[in-house]
Image (cartoon, rainbow, N blue to C red; front, side, top):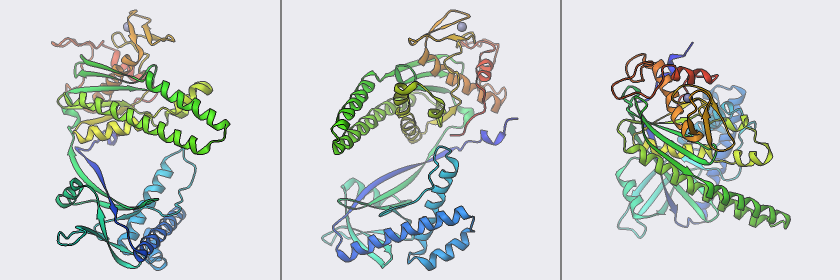
Length: 423
Ligand SMILES: [Zn+2]
């Protein structure tokens, strides 16, 4: 039985925007207050984590936390929120067996009750933050670019994070913006994105409701793979010489490089999607996929270190900023069913795959991107019945459907799990 509640999707999404301010050289006393607050806050989160795990009621934990720590009410409550978030993600993530525990100077989350900003054009420092600490209110001057101060003045913030880094204290101000997202019945264009298989890091195919192919795009990553391989070889050499600092530097450089490439790919995917009205980007649900994959030692390094989820996060974030919906489908077998006849695909070591029934040749990644959307059609048909938002099986419509009668069903049943997954 399909559970109907999993078909419910929000009509809008909340987008987070973060801007950073630096606290200008706090004096000794202020530093002391900030540090003590960060330490007390850390202890409070850890206390909450352990009590939540024990099953202590939240109201009781709160009463005890209030006695034990000299933190303002608002801060105890955000510490509770962080502890709950961490505990839930620990509970829900089967790959993570380490119980969350905070160390050092922990980031402190302030809400509107515990921090405010003041503009004083007449003073030497024009902007000030006024924050609750373990030693009462502390006023500190802050600096950043003019653009950020304009944002701070114009919008109401959601929360602020106090962070410590080697070169000082920072305030990350987080804004929340609500973006409307088209509802499922209004989807007109479908952007299927296949990630990480074969030679391309991402392959994109745009289809309309009838399954007509409107546009395709390949994001080749040969260069990226080659560069990562060189990073790997370099680190091996550095490892032999025990140059640990250099190894860390090389890791940072590689991370920046991968981040940068993913930024470019996700920006381009979303900019293609933006051209189409009432668009949805359909991805494979790859969460937990690395556990199922086994490519041997060399392949595993390649497969596991592939930044699938980073790219996904970027796509989702940028899509939502542009009011584009995102859905996920089960990833199984998307590139092993012929898009025209539903027949089995014979996979070859190269990227060319051949249909055993109709002998058509495909690029496996491209076929994957097409079929991801076809599988989503199946999900939609389950949700909306024959409302016309999904191609009617067995009927060619006036626009010339390319979808064969049994194809959508064939695709659906090839995967063991065909139930939709929430974004
Ligand atoms: Zn075929």
